[in-house]
Image 1 (tube, rainbow, N blue to C red):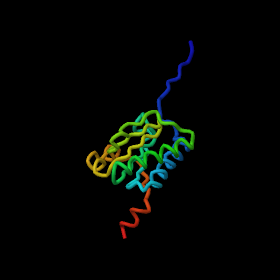
Image 2: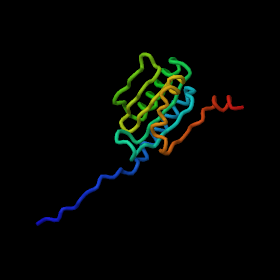
Image 3: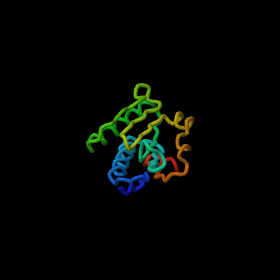
Image 4: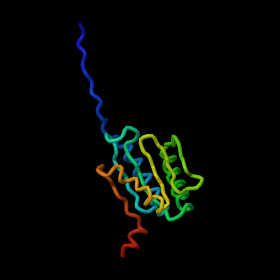
Length: 137
């Protein structure tokens, strides 16, 4: 008779590369003056991603610029999206990079949906944009 060992599914340790890629996406958003850039560490909480990046722009034109900047930064890292949704109207663009999900909103749409509340207890990193620092003076 063969011994069978029970296996338990546990989340794998976060790959440093995933976090570095998510931070690069956040920086690309900040380069286009994205507002309220927040990186949520959802590994072990959800099965579809390790990180969720949420940010916003003041208009759909700015949202499109932020999305384009993120695409360029990820492409430079040799990472292609699995899917991008919402780019036509650009009130809410969802970018799926497998282990990184990115939501880029027009401010009003972000406030309305308040996605961050879904992951209220996860570790988060807020990135301060130079523009938001100017408004806090």
